[in-house]
Length: 130
Image 1 (cartoon, rainbow, N blue to C red):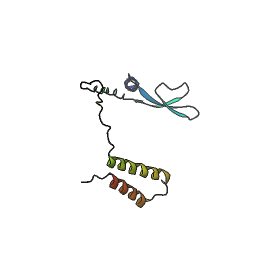
Image 2: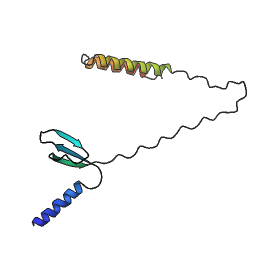
Image 3: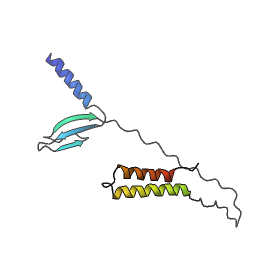
Image 4: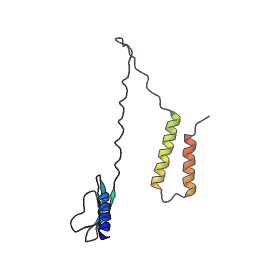
């Protein structure tokens, strides 16, 4: 009976510390708690061990396609006109920025009504005109 219990305990322990990264909670004799991926220091108690699931590697970012330019004649200026900023977008961004600044400055003095008015002001500035 004790042999079976010992075997089950050994298999459980082997499964908890098997291959792969693990997070350990260590408690020092002075009571300090640390979380680490290495075994606990001598004298420290290991409160628990958890396996850590590794995140998948990030997806590669595709390089932008090179711009294809048409034939350029000597002395010609074949440049694209500069993009004009969208005034609605600028108005919306400015309203959001102003509301965020006001919330940062007066976060503890704004009540529900004032916060709702700020949100409504941003919504009106960002609304699309039919």
